[in-house]
Image (tube, rainbow, N blue to C red):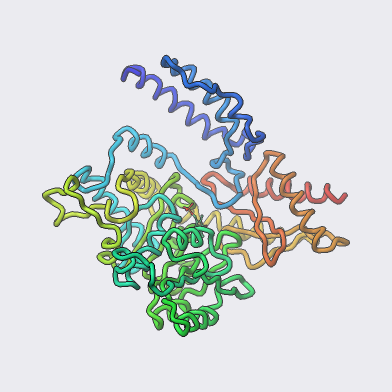
Length: 472
Ligand SMILES: *Cc1c(COP(=O)(O)O)cnc(C)c1O
């Protein structure tokens, strides 16, 4: 493609992008295709000769877009959002255009220094103390794996990385029974063994029982194992449950165990001072991760990992072969040493565009709006006789069940599952589920950039009417 054609196509795509964002609510939120239906529409053989951009774009529009679930649809209430915003998209266009590989300071000084500035801005915005230093990672899963690896190196004094763990006493990790699957993955990948992951019991609100944690750590020590890391969750994926971080921190401090806080979704809410109390004790963590790509209008991927002891953390990952040495290594930050991968995308740019475009107060008011909408929705659901709210709603996540009279628990599970699929098949909104104490529960998450009162009310109306039509 000639640059001249690139220019004209880019103008046309910009129009398509704006039209898409303006009319995304016209699409079914959840893709309605059957497995294999997109694959079947595409040729088996790659084209031998280059094709016209127009033809490629036509297939994008006619085959690919209809096969997408529209995460930027204002009625996307599923999982946790991966929200986005115009300044973030524009920055991604620039990042792609620069096409820089930002592994070292020298390979793009501005990328490194802008990352230092933005993670520091965000640290101030979420109220973490100055001892924390951040870096941008791809996902919370990666960040948690890296925290577990750093904890492994700390507790073994580097033995694990040098000599391996063969013959070493088992390293135990602790998390709650409600924690994200990325913790299980991290423990397996770090070579600690899933059998050495303790799923600590939770209380009635599904937060980790800190006393049970204390007992589990003590029992492992007694048995000659090495307690290594506790992963506490601030806002679980299933229900938004919050572990009591202050109490957990007093346990980890006493036992000298690394404390990692997984705040992947709820971390964004820490820009609201009125909710910081929920994360009380987070200042005592050794590491904290949260995803601006979930609920801070910065499109996927962008996850920030804050660590307390940067030097020890970086030692876990540093590797400088001759061909990567530069004259300034002693004066600069080389982010290639801050995680698993060598190559790095320039992710700070979109975060910087977002914070500058909205300002702290603009971001705060968008989040406050989401939380207020969730509170209203919970109030309305709670006001219906045939629905029940499950657990205290947290921030912008509401969990509920349809509970008409005359059905036993098993039938209610089945009914709620049918309700969920029927609602999603309508294309009008998208919701997902979890299980609480074995029961099928519907989750309704408010966090898309353009979600307003109208979308939440319409969504709730569809759910209500669909539910009643199932038993009517
Ligand atoms: C979403 C989520 C994750 C995983 O996030 P990725 O960035 O997709 O890896 C981890 N923990 C919690 C609590 C989450 O909600």
